[in-house]
Image (cartoon, rainbow, N blue to C red; front, side, top):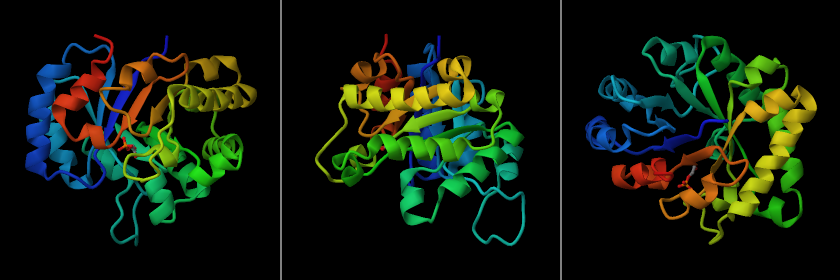
Length: 253
Ligand code: PGA
C-alpha cells in the first residue's frame, strides 16, 4: 500500500511569525493522521518551521535548491544547505520555476540526482499547459518530462521520489477557469506509472508515490485521493489556511 502524501506548497507566502502560528494551529489538527503531512515553505521560514514542527508529525520541505554544492551562484541555496538544517523534502521543477526561472528538464534531472545523493526527498513536478492538452499532447509532454527528470537514476532511487502531476491549466492562480477532473488526474498519473513500469519494472512503478496538484481543496480532496492511482496532493492556495489544509490532510477521517 502506498502512503498518501499531502504536501502544502506555500510558494512566496508567509513570514516566519505566520509560519509559526500556522504550525501551532495545524499540529493538533493533524496529529493522528496516517497520511504524511509536509509543508514546503519559503527559505526564510525553514528554520523557524523546523523548530516548531519538532516533535510533531509535520515534515518540512523547501521549494527549490541548486544542484551544485557551493560556489558563485548569487542568491541560490544548495541541497547541502537545506540538509544541514534538517530539511527533509524539496520540491523540484515546479511549473512556476520552469516558466519564470529557466528551470529545464536538464536542471530538474541534476537537482533530483543531487537531492537523492543527500538523502533529501524530492517532489518532482510534471504537467502540461492548456494548449498542449487541447492539442492532444498531454500524454507525450508528461511522459517526456518524467523520463528526462528520472534519466540515469537507479531503481531504488526512483522508488524514493515523489512525483507531482500538476496540469498547469488546473493550478488555482492560472486563470483558465478549468480544473482537472478526478478522472483526468488519475488517467495522467496512470500514464506516468505505466512509463515508470516500462523503464524500471512493476515493483518500482507500484511503489512510487505520484501526487496530483492543481486546485486541490477540502471540497475535492476526498474524491481525488480515493482514485486508484492518486497518492495524495501538492496543495498551493488551500495550504495557506491551517483549518482548510487540515481538512485536506484528514480527508479520510
Ligand atoms: P494550487 O497550486 O493548489 O493553488 O492550484 C498547486 C501548485 O502550484 O503546487
